[in-house]
Length: 277
Image (cartoon, rainbow, N blue to C red):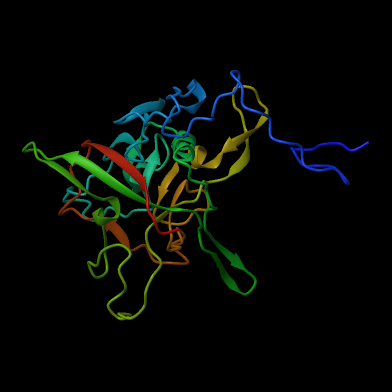
């Protein structure tokens, strides 16, 4: 028995004749003649992301349209103290009650919450860098992750609004060059620079309240939200590996008193993805 599939004739059969037109048959309308059919709810174009920063986690604001993550902090160090002229730095941004004496900015937000907000922008973290000592000398592991910019916004005493890249607040105590710039005696050497979303790491810590070991986000416990030196736990890492051990590298980087505001000045940190990965 021959079976007709899709209007095709079976073996040994002639094609079926076209049906005769009658009162019950109508020509198929062309695209121009077809009536407009409203799209269903599932076919509606996606709504644009809401404009402006919105708080998505305590103290952390996300702007999907501008693709930025921002949070507030204060300047914890006094770069203008005549009795302590050089404020040596190990971090750009730390969390509360950790490394305020060696950071440009301290914030109350959690490093893990900044991490989560960057995930909401579609970024995937890499890994922090490491500076370790092996049997044959230092072992350096470069940090990895998508590139981000870290900017700082603040208001001067005369009411003017200022914004710049956060690393512009840092200079060398040796020769006054900007952070990340090549040394004068190595003008042709290109150093890795810029920030990346390294994503810190998970570690086991003792919970003082319960007495149990818990899986913790190291960036919160160590306070290493935005790095300068390389501790191996930065949420946002500087791509150039710099040891915090004075025995390995002499401390060099200080707050630039010509631009860093007075201690206690409120600031806003703005993190934004960059094209270069």
